[in-house]
Length: 251
Image (cartoon, rainbow, N blue to C red; front, side, top):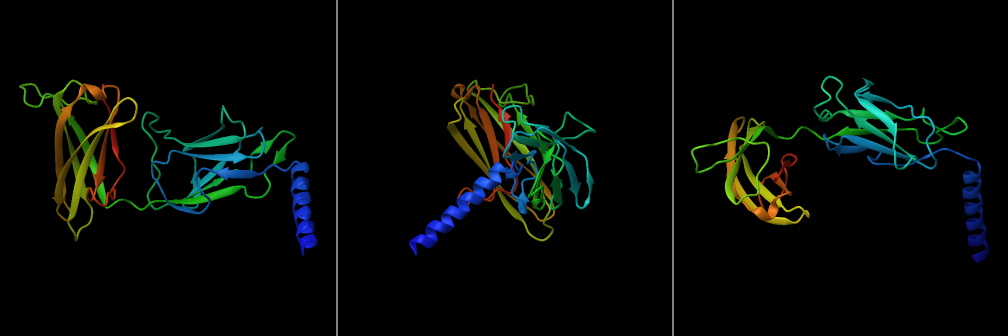
């Protein structure tokens, strides 16, 4: 029995060494798994890792079976074995590109080659499906400064100056039959990424309607240079997110 096991192990090793010696160019990993579902619509990038340095980058994509061109594919500047497929927005490069909800995308990297004009063997494409559209939609988010004073402003960031500041979030409940209980959690992080403070606000949004949830708190100097993250959950116990978090700088 031991001899059989040893012979089998020797055969596996010899085949592995033979594959390496053959100079095959293969994909070893992708940042989004082939066949993945519920991929985040703000994914932004898919990285493809090969077993050798990429010499030629040639990638095509499909969206729901049709040609898709809103992306760039380049060799990673740090790890030359990696090709980064970055989703972009040619019509408005200043805004991020978001994938469509509940749609299947395909990335074909069969055109990539290593030195010697050696093409990819084995797996040369992946497909994935984006998450379904959330039942709650963020229509807008507005910061409020100068609370309690005669001058109210709406900056693009919080200020760590021990003053009372706030935020309003307009949400649309796209469920036409059921109301949704929503809890907004505002977490303040210092410049080391540690949570300094948390405040919450809760509201029920009627079926098929839009409503505004507001919250306010003192923004301490201890979080200057940090971040404020607004989480939109069902409640603070289950912590089930309706949509992705909203992030603001604290200056």
